[in-house]
Image 1 (cartoon, rainbow, N blue to C red):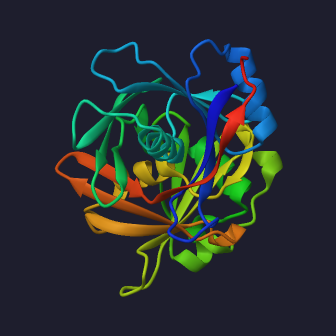
Image 2 (image 1 turned 30 degrees about the vertical axis):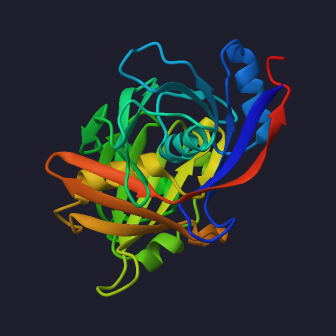
Image 3 (image 1 turned 180 degrees about the vertical axis):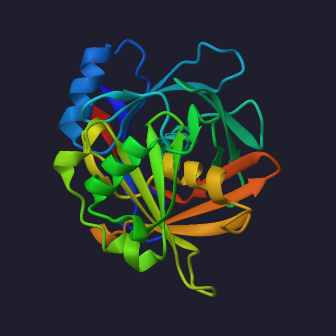
Length: 276
């Protein structure tokens, strides 16, 4: 039996964020069993904490959706760092935790809330005309509905659609049969003076998740694209509204680095018979 935590990430309100299942001390658990367990939990992500292989890291993390392994994901990064620290993990630095994952080494700073430094994008820039047509068809949108589109792939494969406002984001009703292998993020601004700067939605059926409640990796992509330009250098994003959640993602651009932070709270603790 191994220690287990389930952590609610990106909300200050109980059970209003995005849960991640975290298996501690997971060295010795095989990849197939990790994937089976992630499929069984049926959460957007399940993670496994392991001993690091890089001497600069505090721990190593493997991240699974119900259908596949990801090199990086945001809410699992914050939730797993929270679980590791709560279980007695002691980082090499008092100010930061260093996570080793498929995307390399990620810095997670410890201020009022945990925040990770967005990893470099694997693909960015404009979409092709064929890609644009597929994206608009998948979202049931027209050219007039969209302000701009950009690739923002930092591991999960995001392409990001900027819409005219938050209400338009909440009105999107996707055509799931047209997605193919696309993972699409949608973002639109709230009026000036609102509690949050933008509303965000994440559609990712290709990895076994239809709509993700609150998504750190997508908000990292949005911040790398728009923070300090179309959006303030520091802002709060709302996500999960369409699913009855109340996610709040804190995005801050400092120089060339975008930090993505959020609150985390453990909701379940126990043990699981994985790899036993």
